[in-house]
Length: 341
Ligand code: NAD
Ligand code: WQD
Image 1 (cartoon, protein in one colour):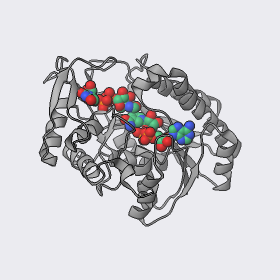
Image 2: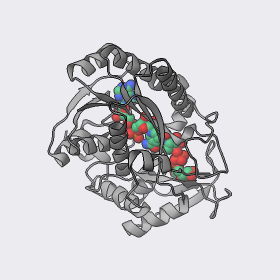
Image 3: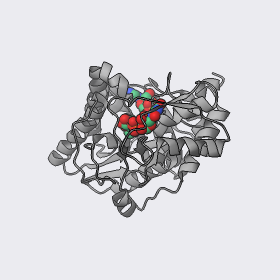
Image 4: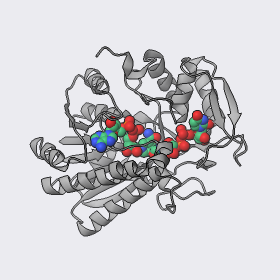
């Protein structure tokens, strides 16, 4: 089977490409490299001993995408491509709607024209309404996202639901990720953010390696056990395996499914920092600062639906996440920039 991964050179896409290659799929990566390096895919090929096809192009280029789908006889698409910086999305909302919503529209048009009707989409727990009622099942109400990034994800979910309602021969999986973190256990591929990281784990790793002086913890006055925010950190390899299972489950079976991919456990910022210090042996200096606008107190998944319907489970612990994040960071202090061109 041939899988086309839009955004497959990025953080989650590169780990998924590795898992798919190891499972015997043919992989075509379609990425404009706006937030990724070609090096991630070279390393995926080295780790798996298999080659993949790379196409440097934009998902908004519908004819190019249609050509890629036809030429490579693609069976299914996993759609990672998009912009994902929450803060930036409030400054550049149109860029987010254009790339994420417009890009997905272009993808669906190309798929329709090429008669490819199996699609796995990267959504996010950010689509859920803020709630005190944890854990979140897929039936929890979606809300009015607090930023254009989140709105773009919810709009895409609606678009896919409407597409399916009109075309019930499509097979669509909407995967709502919680907080992806960690790296492949080899330390060869991992998360390589541009500039100062927004997310907790890359920030902590860069403090530990000495690229940043200290972590700012955004608030210790939330109604949580230690006052810091609680999140569901899911190991990126467990997440990648979830894509394999989801793609497998929907192949040759029409339907639209929504699945939470989370570990089903919440950890506070302080717990995460302590786990990182424990496994890395490095101190992570921090200061408590004010809350970050738009943050919620707590969020974790009920992953039961994915576990039972996909025969999938998170196998890795919070300590595994921290150990693998640290291995990646310590072996690649400047990320993929360390590699010879
Ligand atoms: P990433 O930025 O590492 O990967 C996205 C990839 O898409 C990059 O390789 C980028 O070059 C590519 N891309 C962007 N716009 C494109 C376009 N117009 N045409 C072709 N390629 C394009 O991000 P990631 O963390 O791997 O996230 C993958 C997906 O998962 C995204 O859709 C993101 O919104 C979603 N997601 C991520 C998280 C997270 O915390 N990382 C959480 C929930 C959902
Ligand atoms: C985690 C916790 C912060 C950085 C975001 C997006 C969400 C999804 C995943 C894509 C929170 C605290 C963080 C720091 C801190 N992305 N923190 N200091 O906000 O749960 O989710 O990424 O879909 O849409 O909103 O993740 O890693 O930014 O934060 O104290 O420097 O760490 O306040 O409690 P978040 P995060």
